[in-house]
Length: 271
Image 1 (cartoon, rainbow, N blue to C red):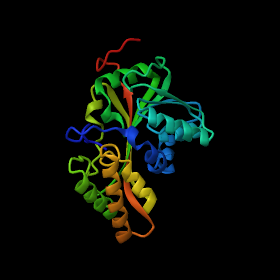
Image 2 (tube, rainbow, N blue to C red):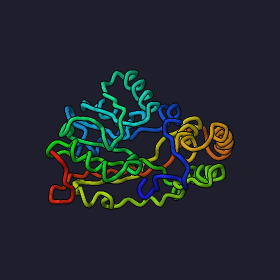
Image 3 (spheres, helix red, strand yellow):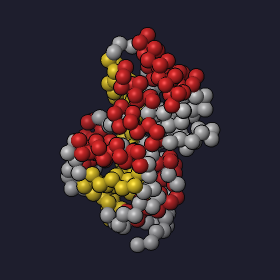
């Protein structure tokens, strides 16, 4: 989400610890998201996509299913192992590479689209920007995007967040306002805004999948000890049994920014 700090008051955030839940329970973007991108000529068959911070490859796999030629990049071995299993299970050809987003080792000018879903804040912004400029072919774009629940508008999200804070008071992502900037401030020196959109959509869950989704968030599985995660999850199961039926929805805000590199002195990179 926009405006989230990289760390929770010094707590180490290790997404690799959440790989099992992340692979199964973190929802990918809904079809409405890809229809909007396609209307902007993004995600079309044959486009070369490099997905930075790919995690378990949800966005990479979605682009591959649309006929894109996709490389997913992540520095976490556990995440990539899950990504490879999921791609193989779905018969999708995605090349997954273990590397930092700031130094992928991929050829220059080899991408028509570089994407980063809910990951840019974890990168070294200056170095990642230089790498994106290096990777993009002429006319290429950077896509940054997010899929975030709305605690101020959705009661289930709000009650869940209250419980997370009881178990992890250092969690910094609670009570997100839902504000989406016209253009992310960090991008202004090196990118121009080509297009952006945001909209709200209810995402379906069951008790099991919402519990898994929250275990895979940075405030729970990525920071707490296994015993603490288990205690939280038991309390979360009891909460859901009290407040929602087995099948329910959680309102999410989905946003995307399409950014084109500036070549007017905003950033200078080697060819």
